Amino acid sequence: MSELVTGEAVALELRPAKLPSRALAVLLDLAVALIAYLVVATGVVIATASLDEAAQTALSIAMFVLLLVGGPIAVETLSHGRSLGKLACGLRVVRDDGGPIRFRHALVRGLIGVIEILMTLGVVAVIASLVSARGRRLGDVFAGTLVVRERIPVTRTGFVPPPPPWLAGRFAGLDLSAVPDGLWLAIRQYLTRMQQLDPQVAWSMAERLATDLAGRTGAPAPHDVPPAAYLAAVLQERQAREARRAFGNGAAVAAPPPPAPAAYGGGVAGPVGVPYVPPAGDPSVPPVAPAGAAYVPPAGAGHSPVAPDAVRQPAAPTPDEPPATGFAPPA
Image 1 (spheres, rainbow, N blue to C red):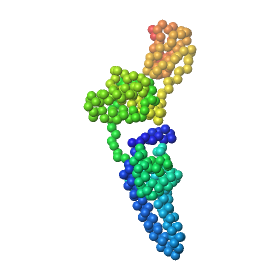
Image 2 (image 1 turned 180 degrees about the vertical axis):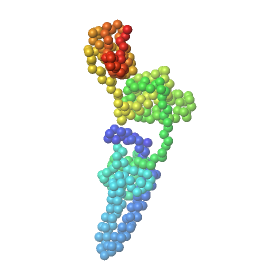
Image 3 (image 1 turned 45 degrees about the vertical axis):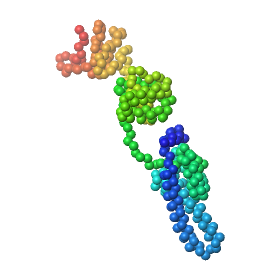
Image 4 (image 1 turned 120 degrees about the vertical axis):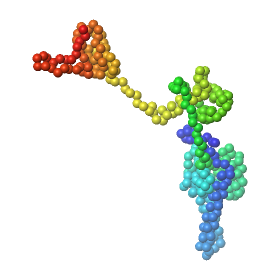
């Protein structure tokens, strides 16, 4: 597997095509090009039978260049690196940064391919592919391209066990910027397969990975946490940070209730359902409780406090007496 870095500093894991599959794709492309050349050449020869020999030779050279050189260049440019042979073998030509190729890439590959494939019968291309670490021929080297596999067998991803609940948020302050992607991949692969390993082997691998991770973060691994649980907790912390970076915090923080306006020099709003005790102040100023709070009159107050509207229960007035407030002051 080859790691390519895009212009946005994103690492891509692409599988370079092997030499047998590339050779098969080239043979299929050459077979299609030769069949097209023979068909077109036969038609041109019949149509230009009245021309002299020099004109027929010029037409044959033009058709050779157009079909065997220009044809593959045009097909790779229009299909973004997928010729007929590569499409049949599940291959594709991409740039070094993983992007699709353009006309200049296909042109360089096609012109150099005439020398290393057609004129040398593919010997130079085979040697260059065997020497290159990613199996590139000379055309790929000069064009800055790479042939990769598009059809990759689907593998079942393992389940990463979550860390214990008592470790939630414990490693929120770790600096994970220096941990490389290779170490994260090794930790994830270990966590998905640790149940299949021998207990002693799994424990030693967890200790080694925990030591490497602690060295990258600059904070020692806690001694009271098993290595596997430490790895799972730190991996979960990294995933949580990536999720917050991609989708935001995910939940809006509830704003605290606004304070009630001061009434008669006092009165601070309390939460609903919590007994409200008026602050100690001037005994000549009756405090007012906020709506929805249970009223508890202060001890030793020398005035009749005013109850909130939610606590008052006025009784029906009678014709002989004034309306009652329904509030009984403390004895």
